Length: 343
Image 1: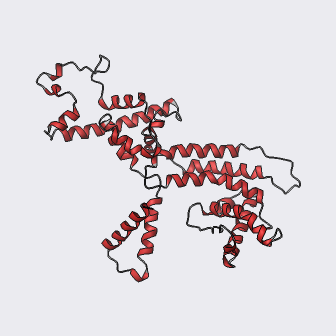
Image 2: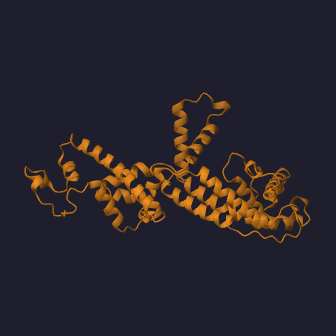
C-alpha cells in the first residue's frame, strides 16, 4: 500500500487500486468474522502482511467467489458495491506471473538458481507489455481514469522496481550456462556472452588448479587414469608422445577451455527436474564443469526455504517449550521436514 500511495502530487492514477484492495480486504474480514465465509464452496483468503503474495491470493479468491456471493446475498449486497470487477480481473492478471515466478523460485527440493535470470527476463517483458499500453483519453468525465492508464502506471512502476530490486549476480548468469537448454546464452549480447564465458573459464581454472594440487598427493592408479585417460602418457617419454585426440591447433589447449567448447557444441536432451542427475552423469566427460555445477546449482534462488524453517522453529520453541535443547529442536525440525517431503 505504501508503494501505491507514493504518487506524485496531484496524480491519482493508482487510487482505484488502493480502493479495490481496501474493499476486498474489508469484504474478507466481514465474511470471516460473521461466519459467512463458510457458506462459500471455497473460502476467501485473508491478506497477511508478512506472507508473500497474499494480496494477490486475496484478490484472486474474491474474484472467484464473487458470483457465488452475489447468488447468496444478492447483487445489492453492500459489501461488494464498491468493488470494480473489471479492475479486479485485470489486476489479478497483472499479478499472476509474479506469483508463478515466486512459487517456482522458492522450491527447495530441486535447483532453482538457473531460472532466476529467465524469470527476470519474463517478468520484464510482462511489465513492458503493460507500460506500453495506450491511454484512452476519452473519459466519461474529467476525473475518471481508464483501466489502461492504471495498468500502464503499474507497468512503469514495476519496471523501476525490477531495475532497483531484482539484481543479478555472476552466479545467476553461470547457472543459466549450466542449464543445458540455455547454454548458448541467446538472451545476451555477444559482449555479455564473452564476459560470462570468461568468468566461467576463470572459475574452472581455479577448480583445475585445486584438482592438480590434490592429485599430486595421490598415487592410486584410478585417480591417475581419471586425470589422464591414456596411461602411456605417464611414461618416461610421455611429453614427446602423440595424442590421438590432439590436432596441431588444439595441442596445449587448456583443459578447462576445451570442456567449455565441447559442452557448448554438444546437444543434450535434459528435463528441467533432472539437471543434477544430468551433471552427475557428465562428471567423467566434463569433470571440471560438473564440479562447478555442484557449487553453483546448490545455491537456492530465494530465502524462502530457510524462512519456512524459522517459521516452524517458532512454533516448536513456544512459551511452554522454551527449555528444549538444541539437539531436540534440531531432531523435531528434521522429522518435520522429512515427513513433509514424503507427502
